[in-house]
Image 1 (cartoon, rainbow, N blue to C red):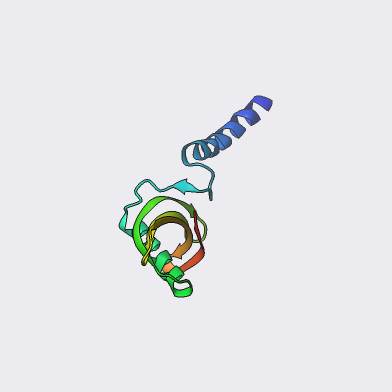
Image 2: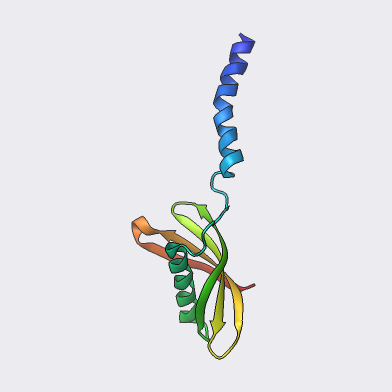
Length: 114
């Protein structure tokens, strides 16, 4: 009886362990492999646009340097974005954007120089 219980428990836990090993923890941050993907670029430009509404001088998008994403009732993106200030040099900024395309919802949660 003990052996059957151990086998059953192993059969239940093995798939869960493989999910954690292969895909990282569910709900955890995962690196974005293609930061030039049009959707990622669109989200980065949105972050710059929203930041420019409340801050001066305005920033001009250059490129996404790196990023990661997290699935949480939509997707959160944490992006490092290269941007130029008007009349100034280029700097990197970290933006966190929450995106729920199925609800047409997008929100800039944070934006800071890094």
